[in-house]
Image (cartoon, rainbow, N blue to C red; front, side):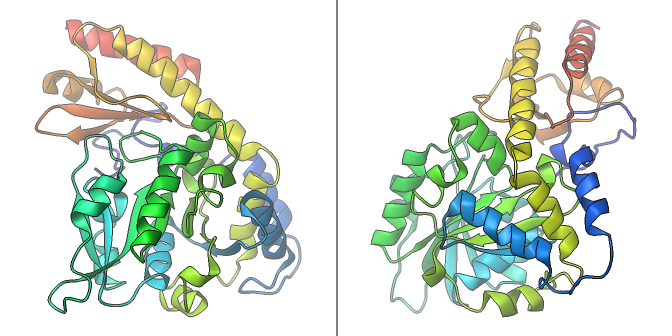
Length: 352
C-alpha cells in the first residue's frame, strides 16, 4: 500500500502517512543556515563532514555515511553494493522494496526478490532457513541478503535480540543483513534503545537511514556498518542518480535531526499519538485493531462504507481492500486535538 492521499485534498491534518507532514521548523532553520555563501559540491562541504561525525557517534567509528535523495534510492544503491547480479534478497511480502518501489530493486539493481509471507511483517531465522536455498545451483538465484524493515510496514518493531538472531542466521550462511530504516527513529523510541543497540551491536551490515518521515524535507542516507559488506558504493550512488551536487542541503537536514535529540523527540511524539489514537478508535464499537501498536501506525478494520465517508473528512489509507483493513499514521506534528477529532468523526460515521 502506497502513501497516496486516497481522494482527500483537505488541509486538515490527516492520518494517511507521516510523509504528509511538513518539515520540522528546526530543520528549516538548518537549511537556511546552510544556504549562506558558497561551499564545495558533491559532499566536500563541512555539513557532510559533520554528518559523518554525527553518524559515527550513533553507529560506531566504522560507519560510513552516503546521503541520498530518498528511501528507494538508499535501498536500491545499498542492496546493489551488497550483491552480485545473480543474487537474491529475502524480504517480507509486505516490504517496501517488494510492494512500493515499482520494482526498482529488480529493474535497477538487477536483483531477485524472494518475498516471504508473514502475519506481522517480521522475518525470523526459521523463515530464512525455509526460503534460503539453492547455493551453487546455476538454475537458482543465489541468496545473498536478508532485508528487514524497522519499524515494519505493519507497524511492528524488531527487538535488538531479534535483529541479532537474524544477523547470525544470515552470516552463518554467508549472507548479509540489510535494514530499511525508513522509520528507524520510531523503532528506537519504542524500544527505548540507542540506534546502535539494534543495528551495529546486533550485527547489521548496511542500513538505509530514513529521515523524511521524521521531519526532514528530502534526505535519507546509506550507512555502511560493515565495510566488507559493500563494494563500489561511491560509483553506484552516482550511477543510480543519488549523488547530490549541493549535498550540503541533504547533510544539513540530517545533522539537524541527529546531532541533538530532535530525531527522538519527533519519533517519541508520533508514537505517543499513535497510542492515543489506538485507544480512542478501539473504544468505538465495531472497530477492530489488527496489529500491535508499537510505533506510529495503527491498523484497524472498519466497514467499507464507513471508510468511504470518513475519507471525505480525513485522509488515511486502505491497506487491504479484501478485508477492509485500514492504516492510520501519526506524525511528529500530530496533536491530541487531531486524534480526538478523528476518533469522534469515526464514531459518528460508525453510527450513521
